[in-house]
Length: 335
Image (cartoon, rainbow, N blue to C red; front, top):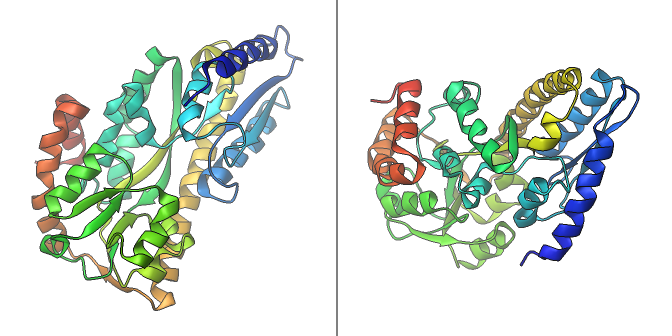
């Protein structure tokens, strides 16, 4: 449970820091605390460090970015409130974290089989629709700056998971999400919400039969060692949004904002390229390990999955926003 008194003290400290950081002259230093919950050697961690490098370079040292990885400052459930209160200036939470804030439009990214490939994804994240979704955060005191990838998901299990009927009765681990729960139900599987840290042992002992995740998460956590089958389905996406405290951002000198926007654009390209490279390398690692039989989904199989899973889109449209889902369909050419 979040300690309100603790956050109030941090908010006061954050307000004083922001007041001190917003320069009255070009010589004053602006400090940005960039907090995140993963390791420095992940795509997100590397992206944060690249942003620090470029921000300090492009502002000639007027801006200093302090990066705090591995939940050094705040855990998943605390960091968004810390940002809103001004205790930190910048975060990169997973898109799934915005639902509890009342920003359920980001659950669009959880819809199964929505994106055929990375080009489809970019039509949203780098297009007008993605920008509109980020702008909706402003009423909550948050400014959205960019989307960063984790990657597309594969399915794994201890039996083949090639056609929808293969999932019947399987206990499939998911992260907490109404949409992912509906996805597994549509496939005839039994969704099991479970912390990521518990997945390996649960698979090893048969508490669950399978799971879904990006290749990099699957490989680095050795999930492939306890899963005999995998399907490269790219059926879902995991990503992040880089966000900043809106009051802090709006109070920056215009030239500094422009320099930071340039740094963020380049850091985002870097982070997303790293994510793509690491997922490709992880997929190769899974194949080479020899513990998992890997199946590459065909176009015909994808069409069959889409037919079974499209009702999830309809079921969740009211939750996400029917107009938003329809706009995404139009952008992606889905009929």
